[in-house]
Image (tube, rainbow over the protein chains, first blue to last red):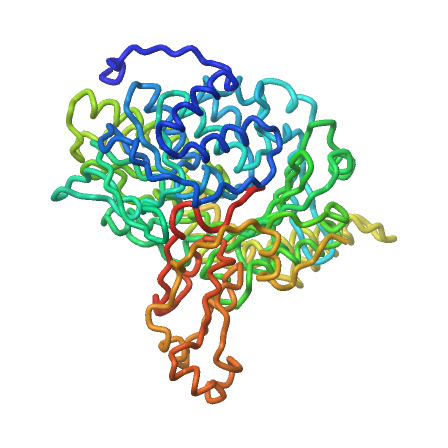
Length: 503
Length: 113
């Protein structure tokens, strides 16, 4: 296979601490010294304080050469994974982040899927544990179908989750993202943090570089042009740069889901007691129905070391239609009789908002362009179920294509189309494709989450009640409780249509 | 009881911000926001309450302050508490909201994201 012919450059996986010095040296060279030193500091310190770097201190990135093999726009999960993998292949990579440090603009439902990391960046998995960048090992996973009063919960837990092979870890984006970016820097990539990419520079159709917003000192801001043979766009959910470049069309309000999250501080032992987990172990609860108040959407609650994250979200269009602020949904969830005891006495330490692309398979734009590829959530390759997994997988596929293009010395669209071809062979793509009608189904059946959450909780509640009646009477009782919510013919119709979508 | 925040704008007081010197969120045609028939979802949905109505009671168009309308200021944009989600890009039925991220290094700084 063509891809095997890459430069044989083996790098010993090195402990992060040893590379910190190198990182600082490189940082000084790139002129973003204060920021990167802060990054290294933040990553090493287990639970860093919000040390806000002074923007005034930043020097212009004059030390950064104008030309690179690759420029990655964005140092989120997709961008940093791509920068890491490409740097390991010996490419000269510059990755640019608009936040003062990577991760400072990111919000997550916070789980690291260890088996996926094993697939995409296997060398980093031991470091993930040794350097303990995660919060808790999730040993308890629950799904709650909620109505106003009652909750039907299904869960799975066991000691196996706390042993290798691990499943999921809770993590804080502002710890894990700079850590991953640091790994890319240690592998040889150059990070330019605190600079916003404003547009892609094109020579005819061919993308040849990017223009960054550039602090020229004083009050003035200017722009600087940085050139590369290929631009990897990992700018995130809002395709501002790629839309301007004509790579992606603007998604609609129906397919952008708005999630809000609140982080509440609670003592570690208290969290373990409330969520019934062992020491250093955590829980994640997916919540459905009640949290989105009649709209299709989801929410979740999970535990960090000393805080609990609670999030809820639904489509931007849905919120606009019913005139709801997402924070109202969040506050309503916090007050639910089953949720309230979990977060009792919690102090709000952060409130965040972020969009998640919900367009699925049909929302994936053209991925390869002359001199540019699009990865991560800009390409709709992030979703509520798989989280950032598709983003990381797309970074891997894009890396293989870019390495191939570099060897060929040809960065045309045709060569870079290897990226979507490789992506199509991944489980991520097959999964997206299998679920390609699901999003449409949910949009054409906007009631399903709400109706059936109420149906199953009401039915379960009715079945749980012990009355002086026979089992036949109880079955009738359950059925009539369901019929009070929705006619059985409608249940049958929705079920048939859902089955049609699924199979 | 955990802390409750009925007002999302107040809730952003728990976040770390480094406000940019200039806003990157503005209304392309500020006067157009007074047009009857617009549900003005930006006022309701923005998770940080960045858009604030200045033009009087929303339900009664005629009560709108003529002075403000003349000045073209019906909605104030409090960009210093923007959480940078970008929902306003997709919200506005007239595509009247210009949204970009703040200049590099500025804006919200998530510490527990």
